[in-house]
Length: 350
Image (spheres, rainbow, N blue to C red):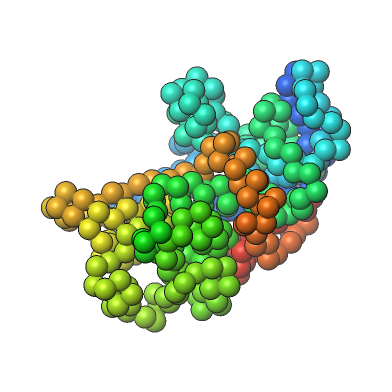
């Protein structure tokens, strides 16, 4: 089989021919039809994340090993199955849950494998979906898609799942005002989900007017261009000088979070999702006196993904796929995403 692999960080992905895996036991071999292109793939490609004070957090220090086939948003059809697999058939269309844990830690035991102490995530710690085939360790990580499109379905396993987990972590109520920072693929999905399941008033914030236009089309009540608008003034005008009840920051860089902290209402929740990194200096006195909650949010559980597939089947949410690539264009796809040239989600069709 062919796979686009990160052999050396910051260098173009290499198309390699690998032996096609043969599933055993509860394993399932998936013929990949769609693999989403995610910002975390860029960090794998670059070899790490920006840390505090100009430091760099290497992916290898987190247990990532190269060469690596990235790609954790995967949808396709079943090619073959191990002898223990039940309830699935060859050529059945499925979505893969990639956030696999080791199974024994406290998080895994309550169904939160995405927060495992020793993660084994597909496309991060094990070869992923930038390939013609993907070996899934157990059929329990597959969700049947029926007649759903694999391109839009693939995004449910990370972009939508991460957005859903973040929206849940805000504990939004219908009377709340929420800012969603970043109007890319995750931000757009969070807008749809917040609109569908919370009833809160949604403010989309980005530095790109075109992305903000799309955010409005996806359900944002208000938009703010933080590059050329006074964010604090705009937010206070929208909230009767109280500030917002919650912020979901899909950028999570020093500059965006510094801005976030200036526009929070008392008792507000700020949910940090993005991986752009940096550092933040906090006024510690305001943390207890204003009762802020700072929450880190990382993807979502298998149960969450099952709920998302149900929402998508009923067309309550509609993932936005804007760019499609073949396997040979994997490096181009990552480059375009890094440069902000993909509105919505990019998909590789091996």
